[in-house]
Figure 1 (cartoon, rainbow, N blue to C red):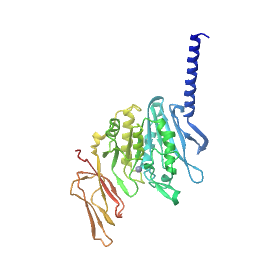
Figure 2: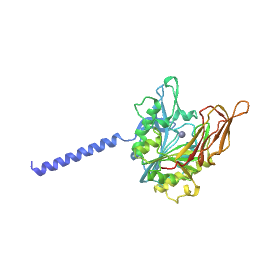
Figure 3: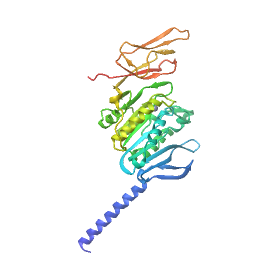
Figure 4: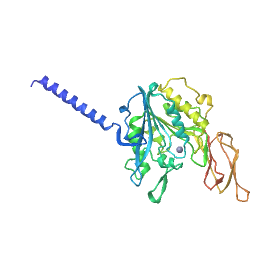
Length: 369
Ligand SMILES: [Zn+2]
């Protein structure tokens, strides 16, 4: 065997070896169909959007974590795969179960997309915290430890071998749906039951791509926020995936006005990434968005009935009285005064307030030194 022949052989062997590795990687990361079909929809335990036919919308149930009896929680998942390659965006709803406007908003966004005229891929997750959505409650009710409620938005990126079911559920979604398939994400929320929220965005504005996304939403308020550990937004940003948390007002109901603003902002983002055609509609510019980087948090100092003197999105000045509390006889037992120039972001809607309850959060700008 001549030297040139042996070189040619080794090149061939190396090429075959690389091909084998590429093939096994491709096979390993294929969309995995469990073989189950629920209500006519195929069940998957892993998503790889490369497998899916372009120019179509694909519906699945994603097989989430098991319940105590061994049955699974299934997350409805839709992939709108465009004919052409492009950005891959995740639209995530229902990480808290009582925040139903998030689900309605994502349904409306997906309904407006035509995969034949889409460049890139939109992946919608509907009602991620399955048991919480069924009960219209913020937290995931677990049977562990005699029964407990776990906040699914404090466990990301999750862990498939984690110490409770919601952490494992998050890990499954993170490893098998989100992380391998997306470039950018929006996580839709509202405030939780008992309170109200303005049309609001949490975003890490120090990151230029995230700032650009946030500016495309015609919202009332935006808070510059480095993120809270365990939230989906923070986990995504830490993984190099630009993300926002959009808060669509009130829990438990469909907040039509704020849902419309959310749809408009999201479609602006899709236009910005050239996923769909069309002129950018209303943004923060037209909306006159109020920006801040801090909340003044007012908690009740005593038990009592709560009378609010202001409402969400209202401008606040230092020294302004914002709420009072009365005891069972109607006597005033507490008065609450703001100390900042800002706007009301969240407010308590329950008229009874235990000591320590969050009455309101006023968004303002903390001066930088
Ligand atoms: Zn939430």
